[in-house]
Length: 453
Image (cartoon, rainbow, N blue to C red):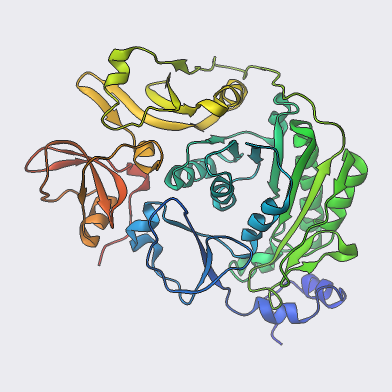
């Protein structure tokens, strides 16, 4: 068995841990499975699917890896390429007893796989706050959240400690903690040589800090889903036991798919390559001790420049400009910074509480801007299944769709004015049709960079 690519201390650790078994090293030298999760609200893309993933509604293994970049429906949010093991969060959510319309925090949300999974599960009920501490990754999280097309979404860019401003606020915390990444050695061979015992200890300590920092934001009786993509006990079972003993939590027993192995001491569960058709993944669920308390927000203002706050738009003159493109029932329209946004009435106050205290990257659904010549819709609106109003659109073929996604313009028939363009009847975004040409409204930072065939 070839183990030269692995750090010698990692090989030693695996060899002396009967829980893992030496077959793990063989499995980590094999190719990883390819998997995607479909968007239940959007058109089904034609993909080389081989079988359904048992532990996730909408999850599928692929027989080969297509070029996702060259599939217009990938950019339309029809599916999300996601590692199969992490999709087991769907199974966990479906067996936990959650309140009606739960408020969920995905603390380490980028790039967006778990957040979009939670959005599918919530189905526009309740609220998801997706957070990412690294600003560049928060922008990617925003992009993927927009493409998924649900209304009950906020994206924030905060350190975990800053969520102490929202005490007793969340019903569910999802913490996919930064880890030593042992479970991703197949995808990232360079990570094999960067592994060290010191890094494992550093990660375990950092995970405790993150969990301790965010713990007060979880309501008593609330639920924590903890996960990593690593195999060692330090970052997994020991941290779960630490939460039980130090933070005041009860470990919840879960019924998991047969491919998932119970953790050491039956604490949590693992996806283990060679035993599970997935990358390495660990997951456990806990309940915070105590009786449920009323949801509170401390209302602490951010330091530095005063935050701009959304203001409700009620003037008929302003709202009348939106009626051709926006379904205005069951939402309120707000002005925030330079644009208009929609907040679901059910969670409007909760969203405003978050916007008062956190650095906001995305708040609800950006509808567009009111300009001198009328309403200019945003790309966020074009992706939102429940809010956009599309009475007519311009259908593009595959080559035209890719050119549009690359930011190009080309000859196109259709009526003048603001128009939706689609591929396989799934919206891709807006254009402003000028007759003999059009202005391409696809976001510049999202455009395809590679050459088209």
